[in-house]
Length: 129
Image (cartoon, rainbow, N blue to C red):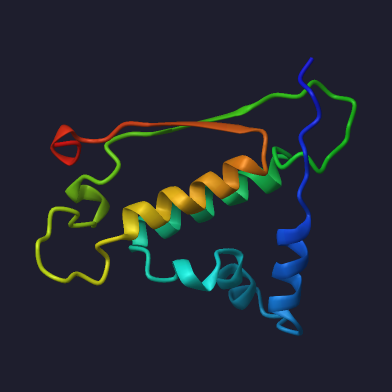
């Protein structure tokens, strides 16, 4: 049997304070990912929102203390950073989205840390060189 996850509810309190009295569903979706990650490319944002929805809707966030068998969400991301993601990592000039891959990985790490999830990511070899 897996040990119970350590839950850090500080980020939930901060998120609720930041949202304040905003009641529209659109504003709640925008606030789920912190403002400093707003510059991520569309593909990265959609993937983070999709992963976050699955974590919370399917109970992988550890908040549901039901007596059912605990499973781990396994996430696989293929060819992260390739041109199909809409992120030109190999740009040499000053690009607005030049750090979006690192921001994506940073946010993904935060989501995985507070959930019963594991992720494997593959990247094109030209990014490693």
